[in-house]
Length: 150
Image (cartoon, rainbow, N blue to C red):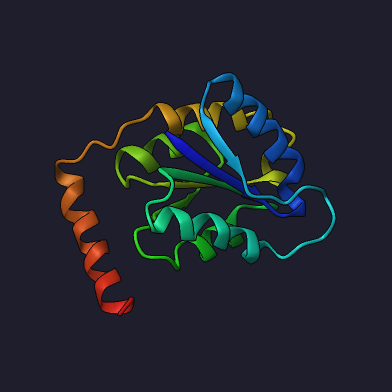
């Protein structure tokens, strides 16, 4: 699996922790920035990850900002991206099993203190898309993309 990761300044500290965790799990990671906690615009970094996932240049991505919300909004503007904001392991697992989420968005300011980031990432990485009844729902999402991304 090739996984892209990026953050803004609000997610930089957590992104560093996530990179260390993923490296221990032997996940192939490409870090697309930011490289400090200096103020940057989150859309610039969400675009870097979502565009490449959308085009099939990576299997999945992780985006980290203060809450995960802004990154998720940007990422979901791209065809073939199913980004989900999560703050607990159950939601992370369901995002993959039911929605086949290929970009996980988390909040540095939300998760920094609770120590659950690694548990959340593990739940998402270890989960498998279940298909079946969920396929028809994802097909409906693809139809929306076809209508809106001409």
